[in-house]
Amino acid sequence: MSVGRKKQPSKLYMEDKSGQHKNISGKNCFARTFWFKISATAILFLTLTALKPQWGFWAHKRINRLAVFRLPPEMQVFYKENIDFITENAVNPDRRRYAVVGEAELHYIDLDVYGDSAFQILPKFWIEAVKQIGEDSLRRHGIVPWYIQTGAYQLTEAFKEKDARKILRISADLGHYIADAHVPLHTTRNYNGQLTGQEGIHGFWESRLPELFAEHYDLWIGQASYRDDVANLAWRTVAESHVAADSVFVFEKQLSASFPSDKKFSYELRNNVLTRTYSLEFSHKYHQMLDHQVERRMRASVKMVADIWFTCWINAGQPDLSQLKNSLNENDKKEEHTESQSWVRRLFHIRPESED
Image (cartoon, rainbow, N blue to C red):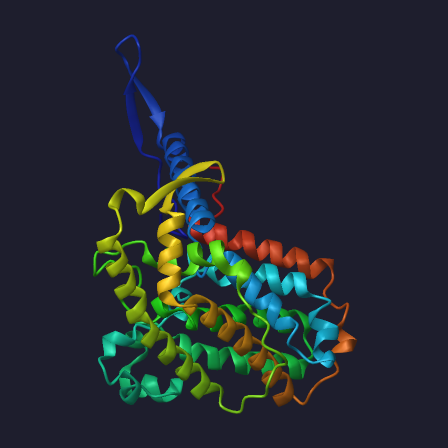
């Protein structure tokens, strides 16, 4: 559909009951086709976001929420006042990835594309990486460790400006990207087991397992710490995640080989949809084989999110956040809702059409 020019409606014909050809305007036919596509895409989008979230929507929200309680009192006075915003908006990056060009690559890095010497080859800072490898190539394989550095810089600037809305939005987004960097399957091109006959393992590790067992995780870490090495911390995080990826694949393969194939999956009702998922027994045994791996990565996520928020505040000169306590007003909330709608428009490629 071209933008900025109008096409004359084409003539389409259908045969009526009398056998005569009836003229149907192209515009009416277009409307039917358009809304059919919108409905189909909407169903797909809602299914993707509701049934197979990244890290699990619950996990992202939980990580951001717990990170707030690690902050010092000088920050909690603002963050706890807006904890619902920080929690609910933790999943915004996953919502945007379906609609916003350039969003998807912010969530991962395919380290195996660069070979065994990836950490020796890849520059730790974005400008150097672009000069050496090229931006298109970098984005093609994911840029999460570089973007965490960008997010930290943006949050520091937001603190300096004492812009409450920016602080909250960037904090929520940055928490998401940091959490994604802790997921082993966000560091490999075999992100969903599609290269090893293990399709579905991504959602299994980051959604199904936390959903079943996170209630028993110990996710309290203590107070936030200042980090003067954000770049190295981001790279160390993806390195640790990448090392853990082997266990994710190997243990699932081993368990599948010894587990009755008719008991590996079960069906559960989710959002009134009968969904095929990994059975409770299979999930429990796989979770045991991983030996608290998911819990460790979630704990590390909570720690790093709070540490980076705290570091940005320190680097900004420790501004008095109590002055911003009630600064997020109804207009800000309406703007958030409007932006959410704009993502849907971009997802469906909707634009206003003239009536003639």
